[in-house]
Image (cartoon, rainbow, N blue to C red; front, side):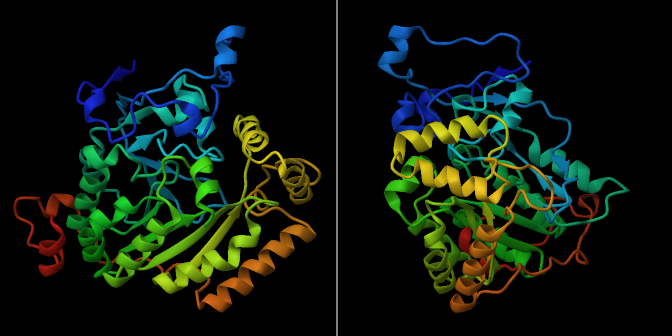
Length: 380
């Protein structure tokens, strides 16, 4: 059973997250039917003509018994992910994780970005997992599904508290985010980086501010993401840029400029992923495309089909992240050339697991300060 969090009334949500017209502050324009539900509701004709209702953000307690998720996909270069939240208020219309909300009884559309599941006990669950006798330290990715620095994190601080657990245990972690809020935790990340146990990837989709606002309505603007790269790099935290998703026919021409800006800011590695349209993401993205870029719609569809064997998406392992064929080769060549010109490496640094100390060995009350000046400077 889901319970709305009483600690998040409207007046305590991050600015702009309550009572927002989804056409101005949301990525999706509708709630498509849930594939697991037999019944669905459709708005009456008169209501549909007036547009979607305003949608405030609600946070629900997620009574998860574990906070770590095992990855079994051969296309993803990590085994374990750490997810304090399910659903993401950033509202990226193209997000491949949207269909995961259907397992919770929600929709992959507006529900995904306005009905957020919060694992209030994430730090305690994480500490318990790391303290298990059988736990062998491996890099954790925070997070493999939704952004750990989405707007709710500013108040709830679950990602920060999880990082505090990881710092005490000297456990390696790699963070993926679009948010400048990661700068808040630069002291913790710098402390872990001192043990070779931290890495951050900043995702950048486009440099076009107008396009970014409609694609990713509540994510940080591109200039803020490069500022975060600069802050982290100056603090000694290895940073990569992920050019993702590359939307064929819409954003691929920006690859060299994104890589150059990231390299200038201090990124030392780069990767990319082309647009993926699994399940309910396909109609949501196509609806967005026809609404916001009608003049590009045919071109985008045609180029997607050229990547996936005349289909808009092919979920096959090995090609789903980049596509195949001559056009996929062109994107790959453009990316590699841009990376060379920007002086960026091919892959992130390996994370060091050798400094791990089980949480049972070091409690928060007795742990000595880490890197002293760094944590003192940015707060603990």
